[in-house]
Every structure is written in C-alpha cells, then in structure tokens.
Image (cartoon, rainbow, N blue to C red):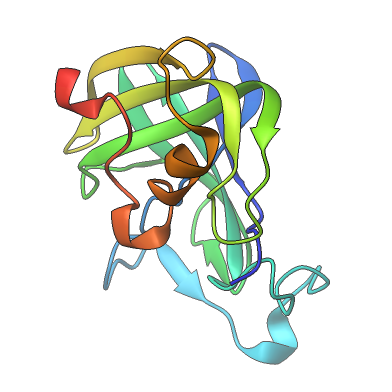
Length: 159
C-alpha cells in the first residue's frame, strides 16, 4: 500500500492533517455516495495514495468531533457539519519534521504526535507524544502505525 493522503482536521481554528482516517457513518442519509460521472477533482481519488476514495475535513469544536466536508466518492447532503457520534477511537495528528518515512498507509513517524481520544464524538482526553524523547526506534514506531493497528498508537495506554 502506498503512503496515503491525510485527512484534514481543524483544531483550535487551524487546519492541520491527521494520519488516521475516521470511518464515515454507515447507512447515514447525511453522507451521499456519488456515481462515477458525478465525482469532481478525481485526480487523487483514483490514485493509489487514496485507497478510501475520498478525503474528509473534520473539526474539533467545543470538545466535539464533526465531519465538515467530503471530496471524492462521497459528499455531505447538507452544508452543515455532521456531529461524529458514530466515532470512538484515537485521532493522531503529526507535528514537526518527519523522522522516518514509511511508504505504506500512515506508517511515517514524526517528531511529535497529538493523540486525541474520542468517545461517541466527544473528546475525552488528549496527549502529546514526543517521538524524539520516548526512545521509540523509528522503524518500530512506523510499524505501529499500519492499518491493522490503525486506532492504537504508542503511548495510548496512558490516555
């Protein structure tokens, strides 16, 4: 698998990226799947860098997690954010320089990561992981970022 296009996250009013893809809600009328001839900006959608077929923009506002935009194979049915009450897991936000590139999924390792624990769409905890100080071997940290471990990250046991 090729390194994947990041999801966008608006955090504290600033756009950043996530090296994690929260799932879209299943069978939800607020998210519409498009037909092939309806898809705009398909440059990245049919790329190996976007196996999921879409890119989302998410926002944390007032300690709640929202889906605010979709591009590619899906779109939002309305122009208003969708409260992500279906999602429970840990978001991973890279910060600083990339220390180790992994050409697969979201396996690359950055100097720091913010981990934000979400339960049914509500932020319950957050923590900054400093990969420069935690003694993590870069390659080992990268392996922990593969899809089979997509919602568990180094240091999460402490969250």
